[in-house]
Amino acid sequence: MKTFKKLFLLLLILGSINSFSQKETINEAIKLTILVKDGNNTPISGAVILIDNVKQKRVANSAGYFKIKLEKEPKEITAFSPLIGVKTIKYNGDTSIVIKITKETNNYIPDTNYQKIVDPIQFRNIYDYLRGKVSGVNITTTNVISIRGNSTFNGSRSPLFVLNGVQVDEQTFGAIVPTTIRSVKILKGPETAIYGLQGANGVIEVVTMLK
Image 1 (cartoon, rainbow, N blue to C red):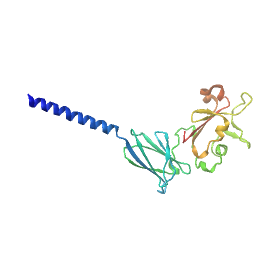
Image 2 (cartoon, helix red, strand yellow):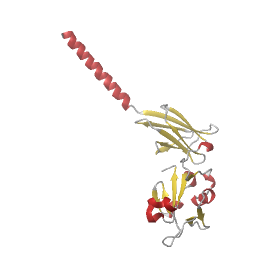
Image 3 (cartoon, rainbow, N blue to C red):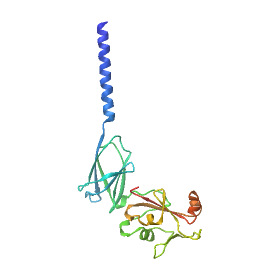
Image 4 (cartoon, rainbow, N blue to C red):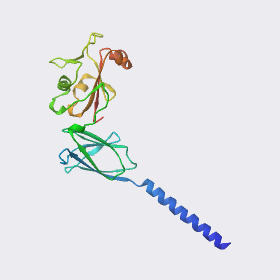
């Protein structure tokens, strides 16, 4: 009987140790080393890193490396270079990750209503950007914006500006840096219904990399 009790106690102790060990493993931080390179395999210094669409406070170092500890596995990792573009990859469990950004593989929103922008660095501001790459928009020499085919509402032809899902004024819209833009969407007519009367002159939706 004493032998049985000793064996039972031993099993309880071993079970507790195993359970504790498993908890330690679950709570262990995930250490990731990310290397960001361009199409020529040259490290990209200063690349912005996003983990599950959350911008990190630090950027890739001069050698293109970025290290971080995470409490849980991410679903995807994004690297963004203002001079080259952006690349998003799915996390596959590796602790050492290489992200290669090329101008041909920029990751834009795959929607037919969104217009892909190539080499935005060539534009001085958002107005030049819209003039050069986005159809359906009229912009005067003094940077007054209107959407083609829309009638004047409330004495103005100015559209509603939406930045990363938030309505902003024209001053904020004008400060958008072209190299940070991910996509532009032009809405008019019935498409603007979700914005009510505010969208009567059309809507320009802009999504940036750094939201």
